[in-house]
Every structure is written in C-alpha cells, then in structure tokens.
Length: 567
Image (cartoon, rainbow, N blue to C red; front, side):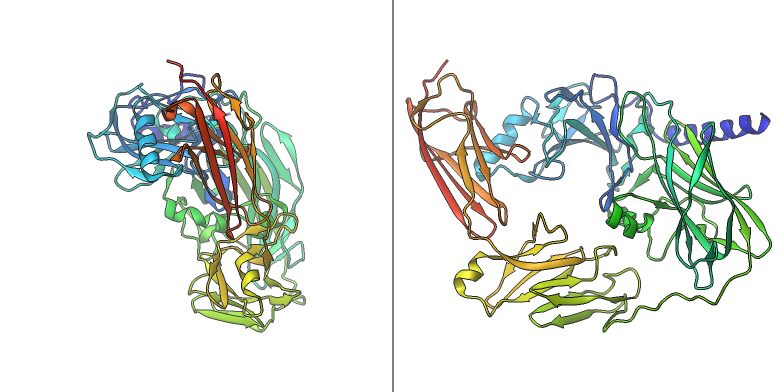
C-alpha cells in the first residue's frame, strides 16, 4: 500500500510539474460544449505524430469556434487537403493557437478571405500572412464555425498550441483544458525482438508475438520468456476516454528492468521536422503489412526524436545466461491513468547454430551514398541518406510494372523514378501518367513531370509503379437545378464532378462570364457556389464550368438559369 501511494504521488507530481510550465487559465476552450476528444496530442498517424487535439463537435458542423485568448490573426489558409480551412492566432504571451477543418470563418475574416479568393480566382488560397495589428481578435470572439474541410474527415475541430518563436507544437492539455478520462490504456499486442546477430528469443532468431493475459487492476503478464543477448520490445497500446469510442494515443510510455527505468518517452512537445521519425519509433514493416502500430521501447539507428527522456543502452536489454529479469512496460494517459505489462525473462545459453539468411541482390544500398539503378526503360535514383540503414534492394521490371522493393521500409527523403517513354506515340504520351499500384484496385496518381522522352516523379514510398493511360474526360452533372430552371428560392448552385483516371486537377466556373467561387466538397464530390457571394444583374444567367484532370482531359458544361434578386 505504501509503494502504491508513493508511485501515485510521484506520477501526480510529474503531471503537475509538466502543467506548471505552461499558463493554466490564459486560454479558454475553443468551443462552448463539453470537451470530448476524437484524437489526442502526439497520436500515431501515417508518417507523422498528431500535432493537436481533435475535439468532437457532436457530429455537427457550424458550432461557434472562439479565439482562445486576445491576439491577432497571423495566418489563414484554405486547402482541399490537410487542415482544410484553418486560422492561426498569435498571442502576446508567446504562443500561437491553430483552429483547423472549419467550415467557414467568422465575421470580417470570411469576407477578407473571399475577397482574396476572387482576386486570385482560386478556391485554394495558399498561406495568407497578416501583420500584427492588421486583424486583432479578443478572447471569446467567434473566429470560425466548425466543419470537416481538408479531405475525407468527419466533423471536428483540430486545435493546436505552438511556441510562436520556435514553431514547436505543445500538448494543448498542458494549458488547463479539462476532459473526462477515468479509463486506463489498453494493451493489445507485444513483440520481442532479437536485435543482435547472436541474440535469441525462445531459441529463435525471429521477432516473436508474445501472448499475454490480464491480471486485473490494469495489469497484464506474459509467460516466462527464454532469451539471450540484446533484445528489444514493442507494444500495441491505445487509450480510451469517457463518452467516446475512439482508440486514442497514450501520453507516456516507460520500461523498467528489475525496477530501474531504462526507457521513457512522452508527448509533451515536438517539432514538425522530427515528426517523420515516427516511422522509426514504430515497427514500420508490421504497420505497412497489417495496419497495426507497435511502439518500440528501444531506439534504433537514425531515430532523431526528442521525445525521449532517459534511455539506458537505448532501451535495449542485454540478457545474460543464468540471470532473471522482470521487465515492466507502463503506458500512461494524460490524466495519469496507467496500465502495466509484465514480462519475466530468463537468460539461457545462446544457440549460434542458426544464423540469419543474408540478403543478396544486385542493388546494394550504402545509406550514406547516392545510388542510381536501371532496369530497361525504368531508372531509380536515391539521394544520400534516403535510407536509414544499409540494405540490399529488390528492383525488378515485369509486364511494365516496376517493383521497387516492398513498401515496408521507411525513407527519410524522396527518390526519383523515371520512365523512358520514347516507344509511345505523342497522343499516348499526352494521356500517360505514373501511378502507384500498391493497391491494385485503386491506382494512385503520382505527380508526373513530362519531358520529351522521359516522365518522372518523386516519392517517399517504395513498391509497385507503372504507366497508365487516362483517355476519359471528367464528368460534370448539375445537382440542384436543371437547364432553364428558375432558382429564385435557391441559396446555392451545386454541381457534381468526378474522374475515374488520373483525378481532377482544376476547375473554373463562371456566371455571365464572371468568375465565381465554388467550394470543392471532396467527400460528396461536388462544387458549391453561394449566391450571396456575388451580385447578379437581371434574371437570366449563363452558367459555365470547365473541369480538367491531371493529364489534361477537359470537359465543359453550359446551363442557363433564372433568378430574381430578393432584397
């Protein structure tokens, strides 16, 4: 009981110390509803850590989004992907708050942005930077309305707090936000790895998926493991919050060996530049094959994350013959709820009879050197330090498909993939593009740069690539009106667009030969124009839209509608 009390006080002190570093009452909540999270800070995402918290908006859009404190709007951006519509507010205390995926901006801000969109005649604005004092806001002012912009996302508000000077992202929960969470993290999987040539786990050279069972009181345990040499661990673990079904990320992961802490990382803060190293924190091969993220409790070569607190031997355990080890992996959420996975280890003599099979291909990679390889009409070029470690690369060309290893190895940089297209006719070249076909059912267009005889693209993904032909025009359909229809009572004009090949690249719409803003709803594959954005003169109006795909196939639609001006 005394030990439990001591650990509780130590954990409470640790969380309290982290919170005291940051102001606790300076920022208000960005929403005026009880906070329930759909995503936690630092949560493991594809190729990056989640840089904020995702706040549920009760499956609705249009909720008021409030400025968390006094400050000025320092940046605005409207994008089809990523943050969608996002607003940045810089505060005098040295922090910047970020509000993303909003449906529209607040009064004054919305008009400012639309004016820029009409000037550029583009929906996407790029970054709009504002100077201090140009657009000030007060704490509690409505700056936006919640939405689901930025790709295929559900309604929610993504909220961040950054250090203004360094741009480092900080866990917003450290600034006094309150959520209900009485549920401890849940362990779902455990791997143990032999990390050296002479290492063994249960007399095997291969990593092992260890079964475990719950012992109650948030404690899990495995059977005793026999091992020798250098070994490491990785766990699949998630957290749950009250009033939500989401599987969220944890806050802290620690490992103790015979009571001594040998590994620790937590999600207090990180920089965007280091976010890519998530692929070295997790078992990347396991995730690429089975879509389950196992977090390592040992640091591997090339990992430059600053999340780590105190590591002994980089978290690698050296198991010696005849000795016993009590390994405890502890996962903790932000509220201090924790779960422990216990792994008893017994050191045995190393079986050196079996050795790992050595890879041998014609394409040896020295990670620190530039490499260029060619197979018939396909060339691949890797800059220095594209790979985190040396390896032998598989590279084959069969039936027009270039197989560049497997997409189970993370890359630090993009490499260049080039196809010689001199055997194609000029007409075929116009319709060709490079596609990733790791998912054969859904080929993915790769930004293709076309030279006279060669097409190339850059990518950070290994796997299968080929040339595809797209000779189909995008489709355009009127959604909420027909040609020659009266639309006096309609507030919006909606058009459905789609493309089956390379995907839509651009669109341009006009009414009476004047450019109009049409917002692209990716989820519904539709463009929406709000009539109040632009004054109409007269009752008869000519609507025109031109849509192009990524290889230049273009389709056009003309329609006439009638609308009386209602004051």
